[in-house]
Length: 466
Image (cartoon, rainbow, N blue to C red; front, side, top):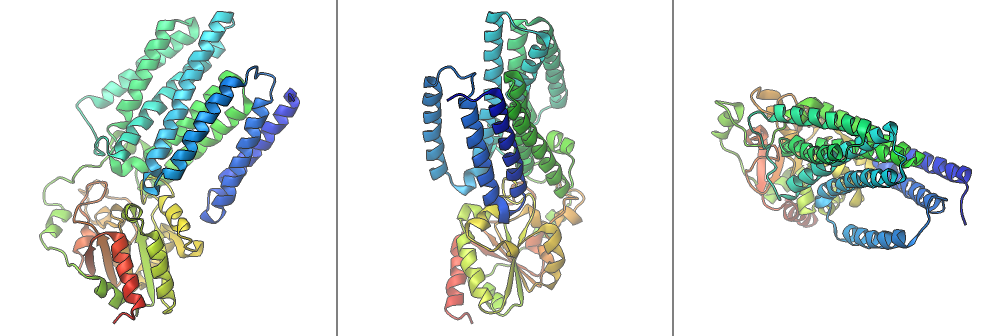
């Protein structure tokens, strides 16, 4: 069975509409599952329409490659931990980038042999190669930083921005040369320089900015796919690439606003090292020491509270404490304690990281509030329980002008009557900035694994508390 061009076009149109519905569904946790189903259905229709098109002449290699990819995908999906999801996303972005490069080069070779090259096609191939190569190496560096293969701290050296500008300028000149002449050496050098540029652009970006970079690389992968769509004359690939490109760019902008940082500041001024400087507020506060507390202290405060606000962070993801938090929430609510969860836009290592974890534990969506909604409620909360978060509640963002995170909007957990901070150690957050909240008079730290601590609180609540 072969589809006519009109039938294939109609199928692609249906797929495009489903992809738009998928993006709409993914804007809220309550509709995210439905959004995923729309996306899966749209992709199934798109694949079927493509495979049944007249342009497919041999299915053997497609079946072999598809089977291998399906097996790898299933194994990875079953084994991946939620804490490793950000680096998995980065790895998948790199695949899209490399695919764009290979498709462009393969198309050039085929069309050169057929003698059907033209300047417009060469320009499309140049765009696919450059965007794809930058996406590939940039995503590989992001993966390495998130996986801990290389340091999450910014890697900077003198003349770095000038070097990046020079590489970019030469790459563009080579792309123009290739588009006009079809010179193979221009293609080779352009490809190598684009690969290099992807690495040099991402290495100076610190771990604290990594959620924005993941989103930005997502946008790059979309543009790489769109460029490939032009090369292959595939309308659906152009549409999908544009959707991903624009949505990733918009999400990056939203996250930058949440951090009070411009995308230029993220790309060229990433942070993630230990804070430095003279007598900063953090250094002064460090001399005051911190108060440590026990599980029993937290239970004493929480079981008689009217409102408890929980602030989850990456430490919750590492400890897999979300299910224990769900049980603790239910026990507190049985005592007529109002429990809410506060989500910062850049909590965790990727957009929506905390929302996904809480949804996995079946915590009701109406209990989970974004920063702008929940901040006014901290002042009326009896207890703020910070579970493995750090930078997103750090008052240094408001109080210490010398801090790299100064100006970033934060969750105002410190305004609660009592703050309990679950931490493994006194190490700072992913940005490497000392947290001033540790030293507030109303803050106590409970050291240990977050899951063990929450399970201890659950056990004490079940036992009747004090």
